[in-house]
Length: 282
Image 1: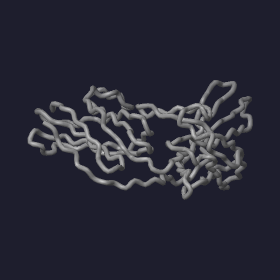
Image 2: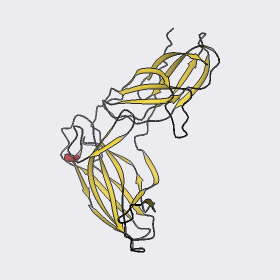
Image 3: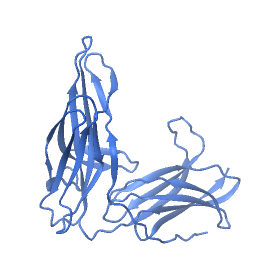
Image 4: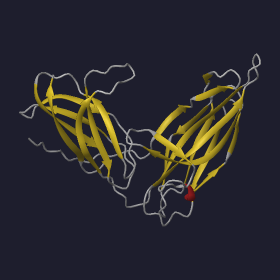
C-alpha cells in the first residue's frame, strides 16, 4: 500500500544564531600524562553566518568573541575547510583543500585577539572576488586560544581551545531540494546507556539542491486502514548540498500486527520529502 505525501511550503530562518555558545577547552598535563577539562573562557554570539556575492548581497558579516573567564586571553583567528559525513561526524582540513571551499573568497580581520576578562571584540569576515561564483561554498573560521597556567607542584599546564563559526557563501538562484532515498528498520544501535534492545528506523535523506539545509520531520506509523498508530520526531539535522545524512530514530513499542512507517522530512522547500518501510509490531 502506498501513502501520499502532503505538500506544503515552510519558511526557513536563514540566520542561525545562538546566545553565547560556551567554548569547551581541553587541558594537557605535560609531565603527568593526565588530561582534564579546563574552564571555558571564550564565547561567540553566532555559530553560522551567510554571505551573498550578488550586487545586493551581504559582502561582509561580523561575529563577536567574548572572554567569559577571569584571565586575559590571547586568541588566533584562522580559516579551515570542513566536511560532514553521513553519520554527522565533521572533519576539518587546511583551507582550499576541499572542492567547495570558500577560502579564496574570504578575508578575516583581525587575525589575533587579546581579550581582558569580560571584554568583547568583533571579528569581520568579508567576501571578495566572488561575483562569478555559481555554487554554494562553505568554510569555517576558528578562534583558538592557547594559554599557559602557572606551574603547580612541578607540573606545567597548557590548554588549547578553539571554537568555530561556519561561513556559507550562497549565490542567487539556488534552490532547496531534497529526497528521502531510503527508509529501513534495523536492530537498535547501542546508545550511551548501553541499551541494545529494540529497533531503529534508519532514514537516508539527500540534499539534491544547491543550498545548505536544516530539515526536520516526523515518522508516522500507520495501520493497514491508514490510521496513525504512533508518531516519532525526527529532530533537526544539517546536510550540505550534494550530501546525504543517515538518521537513526528509535522505533516505539507497538502491538502485534502489520504497520507502515512513513517518514516525512520538511527541508524548507515547496514539498515535504517522503519515504516508507513496512514493519511488524512486537
